[in-house]
Image (cartoon, rainbow, N blue to C red; front, side):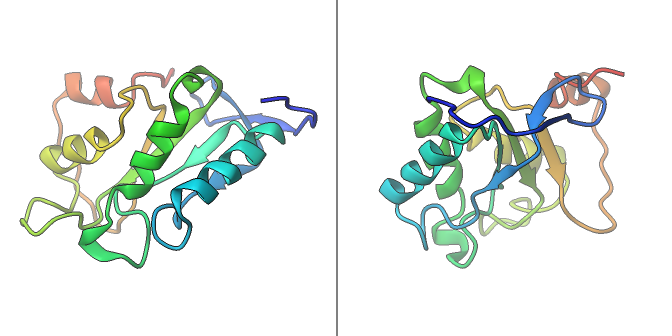
Amino acid sequence: MSNSITLPTTKLGQTGLTVSRLCLGTMTFGLQTDEGTSRQILDTAADAGINFLDTADVYPLGGGLATAGSTEEIIGRWLKGKREHFILATKAVGKVGPAPWDQGASRKHILDAISMLPSDDWELIMLTCTNCTLMMPQPLLMRLWKHWTP
């Protein structure tokens, strides 16, 4: 990561984290974009100063249940040895399996969704749905949003 370009940065909400103002979306990695090309894109983004990556448990889009989670697996492999340089955001709620609990905002689904990432050290998880009811015990919330500061 040569980082020959300096991108503007910003604070990510109230987390205390500083992220590049550009976030690399990865919804095609693993279907429309093969792993080799995905890695080249990630390398180029890193060299350009992007330190903020966005993924989701259902990515890549368009492949259905057969490919759900492939994007997070590619990102996890690419992050090995350089994880400390990146802020990782993921999303949960989408359907990733055939069981009724393989979607939604239940505690089980969220924990299953984040376990797809080869890293347990992510910074932001977003619940992307309307009318989600999130009911989790406080210790789990503390674990899920462990980097957030008031």
